[in-house]
Length: 351
Image (cartoon, rainbow, N blue to C red; front, side):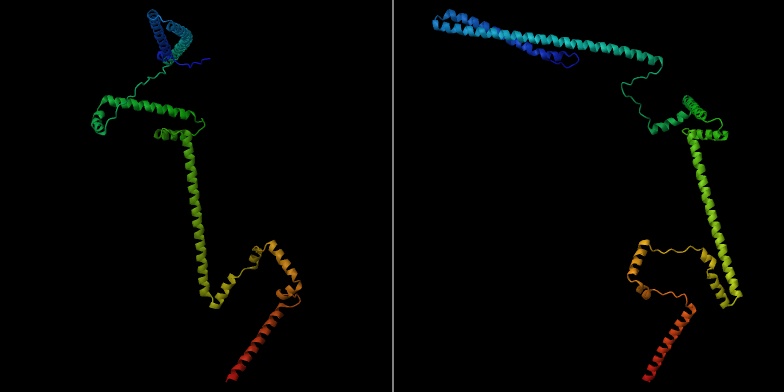
């Protein structure tokens, strides 16, 4: 079944299909003319040649050519019928497509007409620009020549005044919309400040204005807190300086008041820590972990009591510590006298 591609009606496209049919018809006509010439030639030969053998051969040839001609004519007639049917189908198809397209175009035009009338009624139409056009800007030198004229031109001044008044009305309308969003219980002074700020910057909304005020307040509070911290720090430094000066003054007075020995004694006494302060200090914890302590215990257990006897000082609660000190001092003195005697003996022997 022949599937036709949907295209718009194109006469040249159809002619390209029908050209082979015309060529076929022309060839068929030329074949008929040649066959007619053949018949004329055959008649002439029959009249001129009387040989019986040639006559028989010519008759056989005539019958063959006649049968070929009949077959060719039948084939050409079938082909013509097929092409003509195809031509009718093709023409009717393109004709129907063209009719449908025209109907659709008419429907679209009606819709566009209704839409256009509604836009005209609502005054929402705009001019369609079919060709880009622009006015070149005036050069700077020409502007310098026009400035003096424009300053004194009443029409130009009136237009500028109208533009300014129109722009001012737009800003007033925008300001009224922003103020309408503000709650009724808001501070009037703040609203008045916002109006002043709005006329300086028309893009400033009330919400943004409040946010800027809050940020400025936070910034001022941070700066104020920083200043107070600096003042407190300076005050502490001043108190520390006064305290140091007072201590130095007291030391100077004590130095003048007491003797050198008494002064040094008092200084050492001040440097000593009191028992109450020592008790308040936290006890220093050993930096040995539980794993290390466990390893030390295992190591000591290998030596049993010999390790403690050899490397650790044995504790004897019955012995007076003062006696221990006296005995050590006595042993040191004996050793000293012993070595002193040896030294003297050696010196005498040399003399």
